[in-house]
Image (cartoon, rainbow, N blue to C red; front, side, top):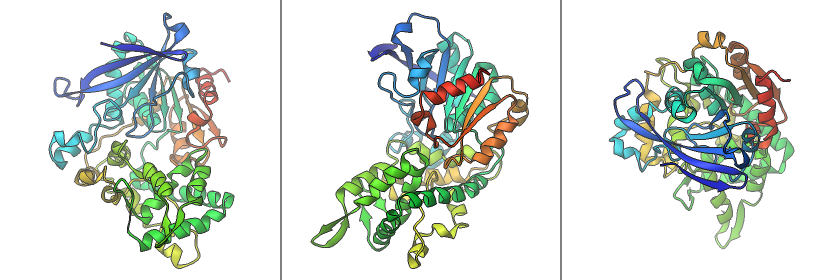
Length: 433
């Protein structure tokens, strides 16, 4: 039974659905999906078109808004909105170190998780659409990885869509994971260089923290082993609109004086562990590189292998000279399954996923070239998470897609610029600007 309740300006309804684990075997095992329906309080009795929201990630549940926050306010002006927790995330049969042992050992877990990619998410959406809309097509809004799913939707089931809107999420259609990270590291270096230009005092602060981590065994309060590579991965923040400022604030009071000498402060460690832990979204680490798997080549820990081609990211070498310590970000590495208590039990499972060679194509270039669904996409200039060049190439490959290329926002433009970003893209898709 669906439960409805109110928040300021909005009526929310919890929705649950049963879908096949493997859509190629519709009579086989099933899993449960959860979604939250939202409608403006003053429009609850009206017949409205539907907008499906696909969250970024992979591995994150849909936003838990309070009232009409962010872009939701603009969407509720025209739509009923379905905020879907994609399979394995949020309340949709979550996949974690606690639940995955129900599947069996690492081999069984890896086989199970191989069905948690964009193609399965699209099939989930099509399975629940008749129940939600009565069979009518809907508009989809895909943020980041949700945009990857949207391009898969246009490839696999365009008949389910009236309009598609993508923010920071046009994927490379044919690139291997190696190509993705080979493009990413120079982009990340530019973000770090820009951060140090804004906050030059952080160069020495980062060097001091890195040196401390190379010479001390630091275990964070939650059991996370805080290595220099883990510290560098805090550069993930630099892909957000306010990320450079938040990183600066994190670094400025890292040390305190103690009877035994300078130590990393409890406050710094608490903030670091909240940023580093995958306890709330382990699926991100497990399947992150598999979102680029489309052929017989394994992803094989691409980010870690490709990083070796960029020695400037080696913190020990930087400290041996006078070079700044470079941060990293938007990449998953095998050492994370050793440092993070939430991931340690899943290391063998992650290795098996990295070695898989049976990935199926996620996109259909021929179908995209003949696309008839109105599509608009925000492409963020020098986006740290999704390569701008790859996105522009894909934009050219999708018939009728209209782009908004902007340097006003970073990858989180839908959050930072809402509701203006969504309004602009809906107008583009409707050919109103």
